[in-house]
Length: 342
Ligand code: AHR
Image (cartoon, rainbow, N blue to C red):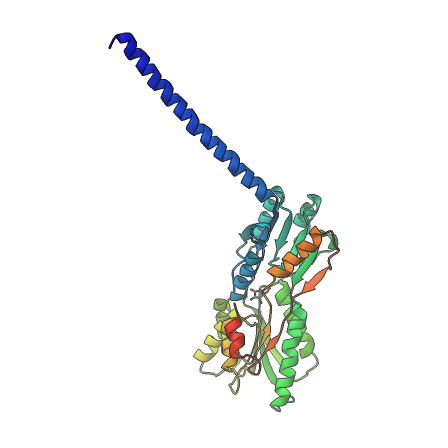
């Protein structure tokens, strides 16, 4: 083969490789355009930024799952979820990041009630509706959020008090002194404030109810145990423990048992708990916890209904309360325990 022919042959090979590369790159470009289309499909979804306050309790885990099950892609949502690990400053940062991402809605469970004015004003100015979940905020300008979906915590506290009234009467103990200690949840949270007010209101009708001490135990099992140990050392004659959530109750029961005292029906210390998660209801069925005031974490469905209404341009109410019950050994059935998903 002549030198000229060799050159032409090499040129043809090089050209062939160049054309092949262009086809591959072109193909990729085409694929990218298709992916871009799917992004714009995502933009058709309702974008919800959710700031969960933490993962301190079994109840909180159930609440998170409920929200994640409601705001799915199949249901037409694109959810951005952030866990604030019990810190208000984390929630404020998250809300600001939702504002800069121009989400359609902000849903958040305020760790405490105060200190939200500035960031909620920023959301309002950006035209992003804010929906409160589980707990409430204490602010003057009510227009800074659209609605709140959560529990009636004052009613929960009153339910605990009314149950104790009846129980003491049934046991003929409604006249002698009744020594009570209270394990309170996160300081400044709606759940803590409401349950404390509700129970205290009923307690104030009974001169023989002697509240020895109320202490914060952060809604966690470890802290519940620690605070209960302190109470047991200080007060040798506790009749009733009011524990503002099941996790603190689990810790408190361990501490009481270790001190050599008994709990529950027929025991030394009556246990009043809140939440009614599955493991606590098992204890109610066994008579270890006397009563559990339910706090319903299944709020995802309610939240998505509220968003549907807002999307339809309908008016929504200022507050939606979820349905809740009171559980004792009389109404905790096997079927209920099997159905309980949290
Ligand atoms: O705000 C609801 C309360 O917060 C639940 O009682 C508790 O378990 C949670 O951590």
